[in-house]
Image 1 (tube, rainbow, N blue to C red):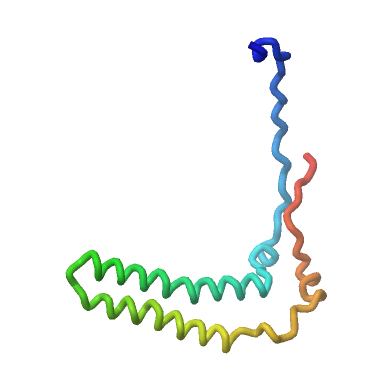
Image 2 (cartoon, rainbow, N blue to C red):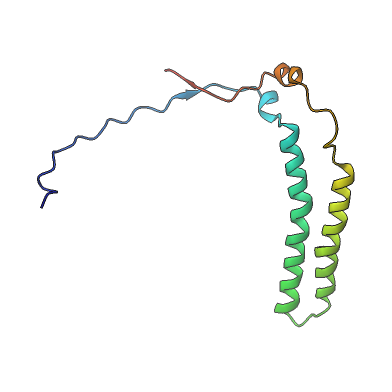
Length: 115
């Protein structure tokens, strides 16, 4: 019964959310080179997993046993080829992007503006 003896609390008034500054389209569309490289690896290596899984499920779910060949071709084989391509084309040992280039774009996260 201690809940009935607890002091009454009043709800805190909700404050309006702070306004955000507008960001130019050039700055908003710019992505860091490391982020772009990560996205490229995820797309190239995620696609064979999805395609292999789809054709494998179709080969088991239907009586078309020839789909297992497509599952093998679009699964592990495409994954291997994409891995080799990404390893060859990756520029991890290249010069990093200079700070001056990043500062030139004036990339700043959106911040709240007091209304």
